[in-house]
Length: 120
Length: 107
Image (cartoon, rainbow over all chains, first blue to last red; front, side):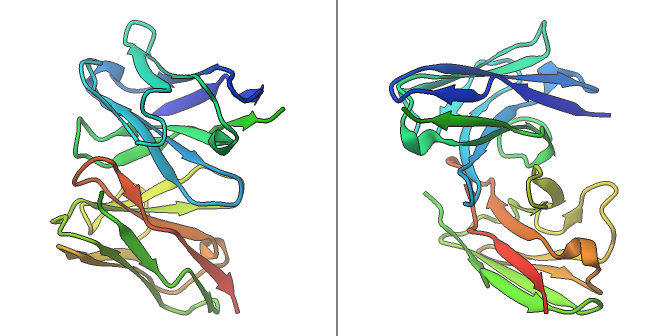
């Protein structure tokens, strides 16, 4: 059974940094692209970033480009999202999700989410 | 970026009703379209991918259709647990984009 468990969320001041983790189990982690999606309170879903199975290719939403960095450690079956220069509009629940294979495939499993609150 | 326009944004229906949600892409996306269900306070759940293929374990009361720019999600015979929010998403190109969501409410 695929399991994805996010951690690392919390309260951070504007301009601060946070690193989210997503621990994966139940599948061969390195074979699949992974994404981060966020959801501001009471709003819809927004794609944040993607990384291929090898980690060799990444992409970002314009809203986070240059501030967020996605990475993965396939030896630890863990996905990361390093978030710098955080702003109030980054406040959201952040979900990691597994893709069905690599780029241009759908998500098929989601974590439970971790809440990031950016506020002074 | 491809814009996904989902309609309606909300609808009221009764238990046992059949409902259809529409998703329109601002440009052709072939069949690179997924549907997700989200219950309050929970993570999204994948329902359909490739516009019409049900995820494993998803009941057959859910069905999807469409190709190109126009897509639909149909839920036959609504049950109490189906009165939640649904999102479409295109994965034809990056950035991945979602529709605004459709909240299905009990009439």
